[in-house]
Length: 202
DNA sequence: GTAGTGATTTTCT
DNA sequence: GAAAATCACTACA
Image (cartoon, chains in turn orange, cyan, red):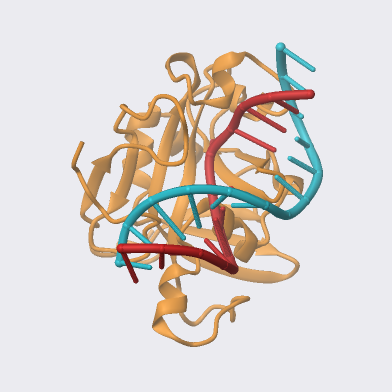
């Protein structure tokens, strides 16, 4: 591996404690290959979901057909449908039997890949294009058919590009009704592509 | 500018 | 039958 080149994240990256993996994913690049279209985005916002100690996590209420990937080994995707119309992409962390995942909430488009749907050229559109888990999956064409995919495989993976280190900010989680007192949301304070402004206020 | 509500379908009780 | 880790649109200040 040469300095400055891209490097796909190994499975051991995901096998660490979720609260270490989540901030580490900020500033990494998410690459998808769907329908022969290769797209890359820079992750700027994530949330940690640790089933054993988190009432907001789907896995907290036990193993079901939907949450099964979270109980499996690290380095796999967990995609689910929310509110009937939006998909959310998660990265499973921690070893087999320990239910935990990191929800990818927002990312920045990388110019020079492929034109993205809904992109009308303005900077405003570009910034808000991936600012939310539902929109992110819509643009990347991630659906439940991508559930339980291997992140060390070809279709979806993360990579490190040795870019400038992001400013990581922790804040409370968004869009859930329980467990909001936990500060398990991490985002890049320098990015404008957040679903909510970076704020550490409680 | 912010605040409130409808859309829509899968999953679990 | 009810709830859900959301988004987009409308109303109003």
